[in-house]
Image (tube, rainbow, N blue to C red; front, side, top):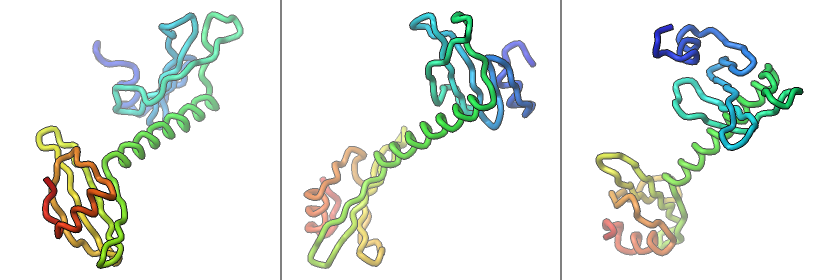
Length: 167
């Protein structure tokens, strides 16, 4: 272990699990019991390997002496991994829902599914507006601003304008 390397980095590099009262590193996760800065209690932070920010921070139970934290154990660690994984999964679902929207418009030619896929590129943010028929064949695709507001009205107007790029 070098002078600047943390115990977490050493364990991750060595692939060696660490099972201590206040630090568990195992199965790609690190649970670290920390002093709660807001009061006299304790908190636990869950980190996924390779991530600088915790996926989950929550209160941790005091030990019997009411001063020190309860030690981590296998059951608590498993529960924390499951909870942190769920938090990450929900955040990923939320981000996907924000970046990929779709709706169906009933047009003269039948039902048309309109999709808006936002590309959050730092250098060139944009979105792709596309239309698909009932068979799933792409009818049109245009590049639009990333803040394009997809609605029934805007989708219908785009279809009525023969899929010309909206202003």
